[in-house]
Image 1 (cartoon, helix red, strand yellow):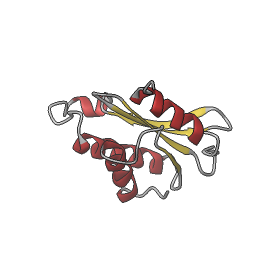
Image 2: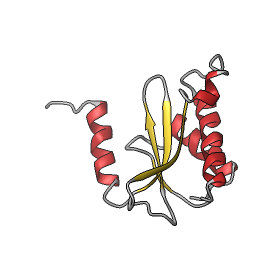
Image 3: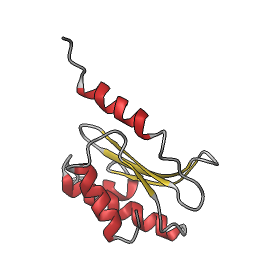
Image 4: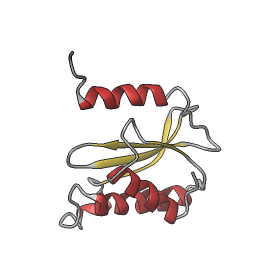
Length: 122
């Protein structure tokens, strides 16, 4: 029996999740993408097909602290706080969390917890 690769499993989960996770202007979607070295998060209004704000480990504001940003939970926490700060500045307090097919564990969970602690509700 052939095994499905981890990447295909993630893509399958993401496709299944996206049927139900639709962001709008009132409650946009917080989408997370996790690569081996970086983590990216963005707040998206799916109705207008527009990214409202975003943050990642390759962000210009975080480039100065590039020594601290390794692919671990602490860098995800920094990205989560930065994203929440930017979203609240734009008037968004409530979002729908889209984990992007990744398991809610490790770096994805750290980003979500940091965003919650910084003031986003989901």
